[in-house]
Image (cartoon, rainbow, N blue to C red; front, side, top):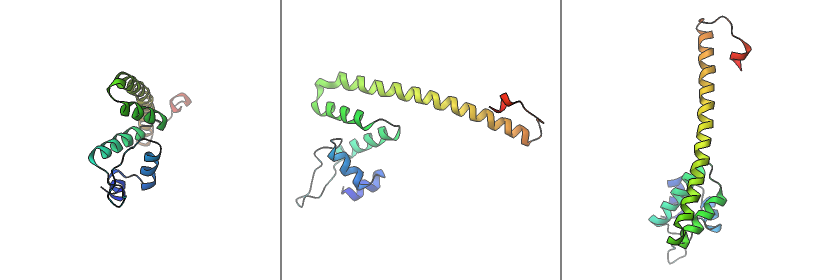
Length: 129
């Protein structure tokens, strides 16, 4: 796939793909005889992984560390697992915080629905907060 096709497929700009290549997240991108990038299935799978991790806030530095370890081979499996476990822990903490915020919003929305429907005439500041 060309850089334009990959860009469209993964909704990333060509500049982002070049940046990922420059910082080492994507390495050894195959090229045609004319030197044009020709992304293969393996490279596309890596792009998909990177995009997935970035979409939930995994830092570039963590991804660089992970990819560096990945490219060193089997001897780094334990360290890669630990790195991913650390990221999972952070995401679960973030998920808990998001769930608590959604619960709070649901409470406030229900309160306002009751007021709008005339089921409540007044409410305390404590309920409002």
